[in-house]
Image (cartoon, rainbow, N blue to C red):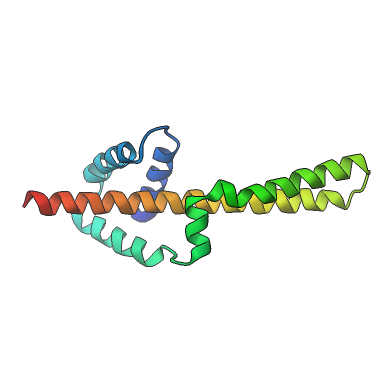
Amino acid sequence: MGQLERLVLMAEDELTQYSTDARKIEKLRQKIGLSVPLQEQRQVKEALLAEMPTDFVSQLIETQRQTVALPFWGIAGLGLLLGISFTQPLDFIATVAGGFIAFKIQKRGWRLQAKRLVLQTLEEIETRMTAST
């Protein structure tokens, strides 16, 4: 597992905590400061900047992943309802497809949000380093 992947996993762990973004960045900053050398921090930041998507849909999924996935959860629920009430096995395809798409959207949004948190943390570390010198 590369350094970038490890930092993203650490950020995903922080996202599960109910706290402000500033607190998440502070906790993540301490972990990154202790475990990742400064040169590797710069390499990870460059890799993240190159990897982060800039298109509108990806940014929307990053900031509003639950809102974007909601219609697909509705399709899944409607397919389940219709499949049970009308005994139509083909309606269960909508359940599976809608659930799968909604899950993938939320997973992608979660991953993008974790990457953004790592990027913000690395930028804060860099600003603190330049401010102290």
